[in-house]
Image (cartoon, rainbow, N blue to C red; front, side, top):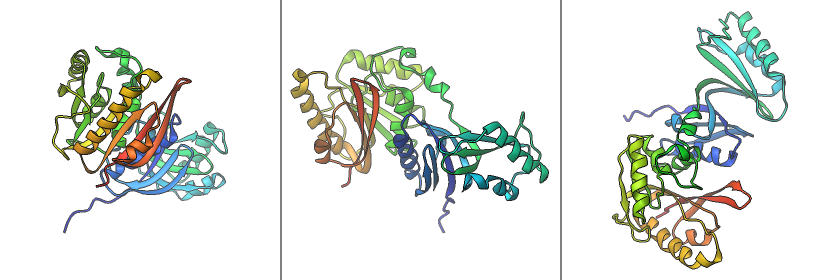
Length: 331
């Protein structure tokens, strides 16, 4: 009999930068490993069931083992019956919208309930942390991990050997890689790789990476960036309109199209969009995803080759709002 891994119930505290994208990142990352079931969502809180390498998540602040949700006024009753580990524990309360409480006071009161029940409460040196998130309801869980956001600052574009402006930042790049549903040791292609931000984030998660760019200088710079992070520099000079790969050979595509800057470049840019999109659909495996970033809407074009299962917006400044398309090759 096949050994089926038990589904876990997770409680995620998401980044508020782009809640819709953060929720989708969790969903499609977990779906790439297992079944996924949404249980509850409330502002920056997502409760779901699934399995997967949640350490990869970029737009999640914290992940917990889900215990329960309740009305905020019922929290004390929950803590009077809450099962706790026989180790040093503490309670941490976070307001994330909705009804707000004095977090420090709530931590003391809830911790006192556990202490009176015999728990070993240690604020300064806990071995287990009970998280309470307050949105429209209260959500309770045992902390599993916190996202190390410093890693993304260390890898910001200006810290890399080869730099170009207006690239997707590492944290969002990682989220888009996760959105693609690509797993470790599978192949991710960025057919317009530029400085290699998507490739770097994917490579650091043990995903096989391939890059294409038409300009020799950029190919050289991208390779330099990849080597800087100890990654294989699998980058070729080539044309996204004529990819040098077999049909149905790529597990995931994540790319950022050149942006339309003026009406003068509209014709040549749309030629690239049409022909490159057709090539993406050719080389991508069936039932797999392409994540495509653009500064223009081109739903109709994409719909000729893919099923658009998600569309997200990321405002950069008043003159630039990125469109992020999650596209399924549904044949």
